[in-house]
Length: 384
Image (cartoon, rainbow, N blue to C red; front, top):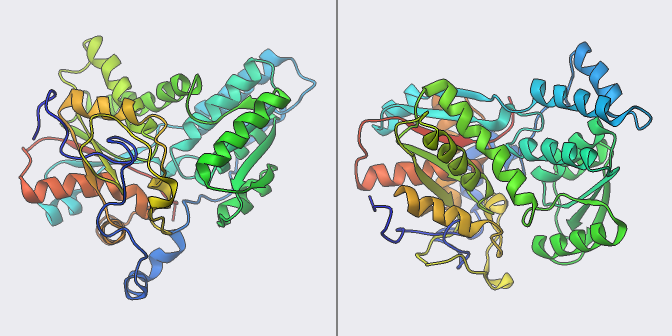
């Protein structure tokens, strides 16, 4: 395992710079898909049932979404919804997975318990609250799926108009979810990165809150993902040996690292966990670099991990190096098999791409047995 000063053994679109496809990331064979059977419906995104608020929370929704109510009352009501519905997700020890892999004390942090099924709800709700606080009545974001659904739901509960730019070639049932939550869908030519540029320009021109990652939003997003670290501390009472995270833009991994930094500096934990990144890219680079847009190979499985511009990649790369962690590439086959193993051994239905961190952890265990300690894997997906 490398120390904090040595170059990482791997990088990717989120942590080591987007530099090209890792092994095995082409189109998935028909035989593999048929073998996986029930996992097929999860390929294009995570999903949760329509949010059903308790009677108490429904009262808060009516207040938060009422444009005629005083802003302080709206914000207080919206914060109560956040406190009651977002975060504080399940952490469970995966004993069957331990027996299968030989790695002891694996804990699964299942972000699928959030309202729309992923950790994106944490930042979507926070940014809608930020928009309300700053006097905006509209919010805009570019997306290929999960973040758009999270923003659409949060905006509906907050009484904000929501405009979502989506690459015109992208198709997913999650687009229908956005529309069902009241979002206005605008199709734009090109890829996700171009959609982000279009969304930012549109938001600036029309004086709309820009919820896209990067810039000033990174600070808020890091803070919200840092809450995952606080929740882990509440359960484990110390930092684990390593935290494994699926990565794309790098924001989630960097935010969790910053959360543990805060805990460690205040003397709450005895150590910093090693940050482990799993993605569809891998190469050892000093900095995060942009890919040629046409060089990436996107599939129905790796889509949540794929981009050619890693917005918070350098932050994530710095976190990996500072903690002596590592990054590994994860093929479509690896992620499908890992998702299937979780379903069969732990009864947990997850988005296959969210297993990239677990793939990175287990690949290292196979090559170089890890010490007996505690390991946390962040997962997202649909609730059964």
